[in-house]
Image (tube, rainbow, N blue to C red; front, side, top):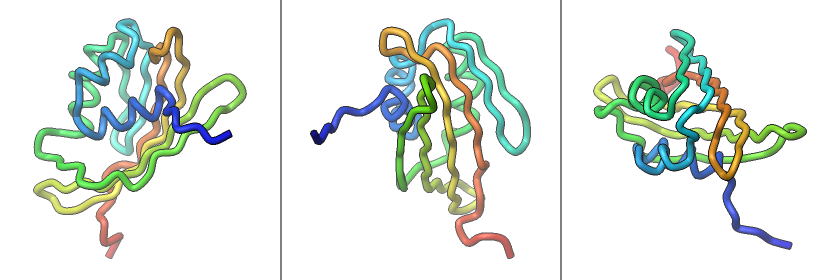
Amino acid sequence: MLTTETTVGERFARAFLAKDWDAVAGLVDPAVDFRGLTPGRPWEATTADDLIQLVLRQWIEPTDEVYEVIGVTSDRVVDRERVTYRFRVRNPDGDHVCEQTAYYDTESERIVKLRVLCSGFLPRAGRG
């Protein structure tokens, strides 16, 4: 049977990449347990507002234009959900590609625990 239903993780990824902070807030529990790792540092948040204001808005800044979502895939690892998303972003430093993998748990269709690993913004042309 073919299904077109999207997971909470897929909806989270697309809302994040669109900078739709209201949609992100609607998908994340107010008391979310968040940990993330980017090439430069670890990140933590214990509220949806902190996750959005202090983490996600730093990861994709106002000058960052996400101009292509290359792919969004989801799967399960036993009883934990996983979503991976790769995208192209343009900013004053040039064109980049980035990928993030998120592992998450939900309750009542909201993310209550979220762990994200980020590749960082990699120059689209690759290394010289």
